[in-house]
Image (cartoon, rainbow, N blue to C red):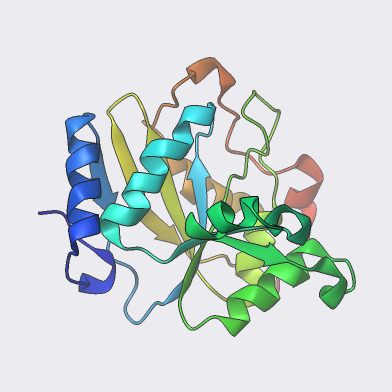
Length: 208
């Protein structure tokens, strides 16, 4: 039986989800979180296909991880809002954070007792020149680690493979993330985005 989040006991639903994953050829991964860690931002990559959604959803159910994502509150109106919340969606009202998306997400992290907030840092299923850095600054500002999640179609492995505590040195921290994802391949490898931050972000001063 696979590892579950924080050692939670399996339920009927998690056992069924695990069975479905394994029948589809997937190996679920879940690196134990840092001692006492209950809140994380998770960067899931490489996100190259809409089909990433389904193994990701069954991994969430199989491991019982408190995985969530945020979306505009307009997406959560009835009836589609029922499904959005069922798969971990949290409605986000940017106005409460002065319209700043990062600050709005940080407020969500701060109010929850336990959360793993999912972000697809490539920002597109097609190839881009660099990763978006919003996820990084969410974790940095909230003071939580980044859980690096592999969507590895090459080896049919899926889940958290390590953690990086953001330091403010964007380039160095991205190098750690890239090292963890070195041998991970997406469903459409030519759509993978290089694991580098936006170039002007690497010149920001490192906090003392």
